[in-house]
Length: 170
Image (cartoon, rainbow, N blue to C red; front, side):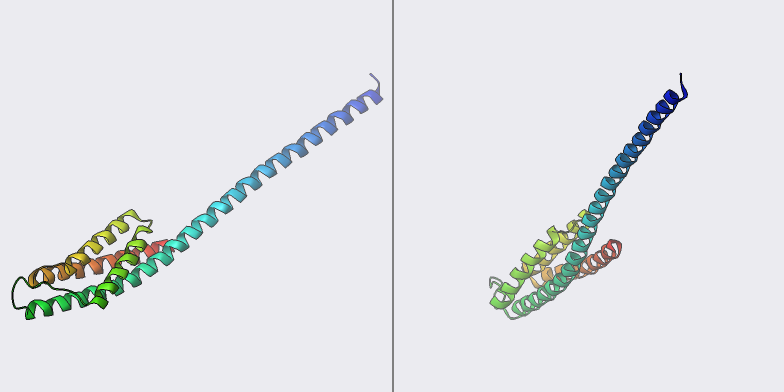
């Protein structure tokens, strides 16, 4: 073969290998860009979820504190009623204002607690809500006092657990 033919064959092979390398580089670059964009979107979603949980838990702490104050007021009203009642059949009724405040607070607490991502914390808050209810529906001063004491310990533990989850969310 003549040198010109070899030169032509070399040029063709060089062009094909150069084009193949360029195409391969483009394919690899595009694939890496897709992976990077997917990872960025996943990271953004995770950060948004963390921010939501963080703000939900902060709001939950506020609502729990205000609900606890309302339950304490209800407990005090019940104790006063138990002390002043004339017969055991007298039914204790909360003031309409306090009853409405408790209802709204309980509703908000229910909504916020269902938004908690941490299953264990969500169950803990549900138990705490049950203990709050047991204070309000107690049928005697002794039952109310015991329920309130149990609620106080559970409240402190729940607030500590919320704080721990908040710190881990950061």
